[in-house]
Structure formats: C-alpha cells, structure tokens
Length: 189
Image 1: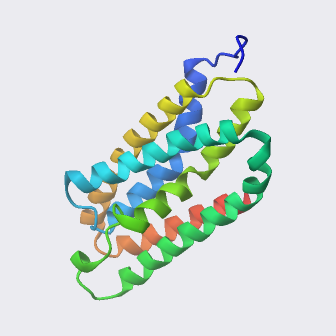
Image 2: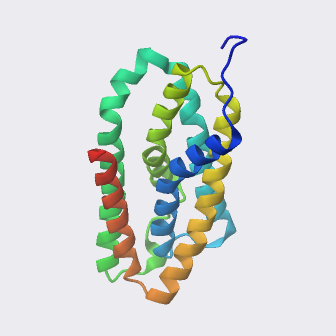
C-alpha cells in the first residue's frame, strides 16, 4: 500500500469482525452440542483455528486482489455450502444413530476442523479484497477479526455444551440442521 492508506475506525473493524464471526459462533455451538468437543484442548483447537482462518482469509483476499477473486467469488458460496452441508449431514446422521458419542469424530481435529475453518471463513476473503479496493491496510483489521472470531467461538463452545447437556443428545440433530441452514444462507446470499 502507499503512504495514503485509508484508516478504518476501530468501531468499524469491530462491526466487521463480529459479523464475520457469526458463522464461526453458530458452528461452534452446533459442534459443541454433540458432546464431541470435550476438554480445554479441543475447545482451544476449534476456536484457535476458526480465529486463525478468519484472520488469514482477509490477508489472502487483500493480496489476491483482482487476479484470483473473480474465480473464487463465484465458487466461494458453493464451496462453503458443500462443506457445511457435509458436516451438518454427518451430525444429523450421528444424532439418529445409537452409537456411543465418544466414538464420533471430533470436529476439532483433522479434516473436519479444516473443512469447518474454511467454510466459516470464505466470506472473510471477500472482505480482504474489498479492503484492498478502498486502500485500507489489512494487518490491523485482520488481527482484530481473528481475535474476535476466536473469542466468540469459545463462547459458542461453552453455550453449545450447556445446550447439549440441558436439552439432551438430540441437540446434535439441531446442530447439524443449523450447519446446513448456514450453508444455504451462504449459498443464496
């Protein structure tokens, strides 16, 4: 960027960060309802990766600029929908199956973690591209976006644990439905 970078007000950055973090917050609730995210390490892994991906995607979008964004912008909603529908569908099936919840895959590990992280952060790619177009430096907003997302994800995990314990094991079905609905929302917005 040049010497004439546009500065964003902190309140604008917070509003952008919170709006971007809402998908990660909802996915954290849904994932935690299943009872598969147990312990501080799993909660840290999920919230850290959600925050990391939300922080990285605006930077990628900012640097990609006009070269890559037209290709990704059209496919981004479909990619996010497919990832969320796959994970949500798997959660719904697990909610109906009588298998032990401890044998179910942990959404804070492996490919599930990566797929959820990508799916919840694709919209941040477009934000990074937009900030580049208005000549805003990306580093500070990106860090704030990542921190807010990680914090809201932790809050979502705690809320999901509470809901899962108080409402019961069928909460996993509701969580899976939430993921699929978020996927449709992304696809049709």
